[in-house]
Amino acid sequence: MRLRDDLRLPSWHTLPSLVLAVGLGWLASSVHVPLAWVLGPLIATALISIAGHPVFAPALGRRLGQAIVGTSVGLNITAAAVGVLIMWAPWMVVTALVAILFAAALSVPMSMISKIDHKTAFFSLTPGGLSEMANIGVSVGAEAEPIAVSQALRVALLVCLMPPLIIALGIDGGLINQASQVQLSWWHVAVALAAGMAGVVVTRLLRFNNPWTVGAILGTGIVAATGLLTGRMPGSLFALGQFLIGLSIGARFRRESLVRLPRIFIVSALFTILLSVLLFAYAGFLSALTGIDLASVALGSSPGGMAEMALTAQVLHLNVALVIAFHVIRAFFVNGFTLYFYKFFSWIGLFSGVAAVLGRRWHH
Image 1 (cartoon, rainbow, N blue to C red):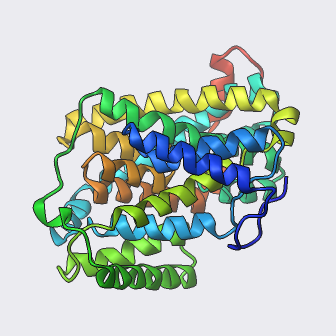
Image 2: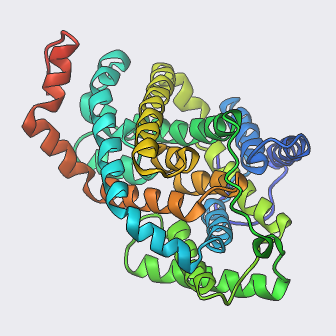
């Protein structure tokens, strides 16, 4: 399979995937599926890619999609929201550490069942950046392809499962106010996008993780918190950002990987769901302890992708700024210090301890 290397129009080879992606996105949107313009393109592109046909997924697509969505999400950040984030920051750190600990413990049985080495299992399951985990894992001798497959599957599964779950619980945050329902004029859209891109440039220079999402959120959020920008992104542009993200996630599911690593797909999916269940239970505990609404904590602690979970929070009228902050803190710890966590857990005997509980000998 060959991905387009830039943002040129699709060739006739990739046109069917684009048409199906648009069709499924429109269909999902028309029946009010949450995150329709992510899920439709994701499913369409993944199916065609797994079937072995070329797909339209521009190399810059995900980045532009993240910048558009990040800008839209940043419009939700108010001065009051910033104060709330500071108050809950210690719990965000605890949540990040709990997620890493759960993933580390589950990586032992995942390694045994999937028959891959433990380093590969650890970096496959730890919820970090789609490319960062593979790069860090390879640097210490882990296998890149299983990690890449598992990380893509994690993001795809969670974006499919979390919104319906929150909706099934009958939760609507009700945080949209009249001002935020007003659509920005195209002039103000240009200002918002400029602020978002300025944030992207700064965060890239500072070597932040996930700068296209984090930078756009910060850049727009700073302007929005001052009250200079109030409103929401036009629906068509917001849908385009989601569409580009969906294409890029779906394109990560390659036929050759599925044929070569069928066991990884199955086992990784099961352990991603198990990790999500554990973190959802933790979210229930944290919600009861702190009084933060369950849906926002569930999305904040979810092992899903940052842009996708922020999108879900926005669609369900939840505390978007809080969800983003949970994910930014976790991304900082996971992408920046995963290798050190791996060495620390090995040193204290966590992995051998889990193996002993499972009745198995531990092999490094």
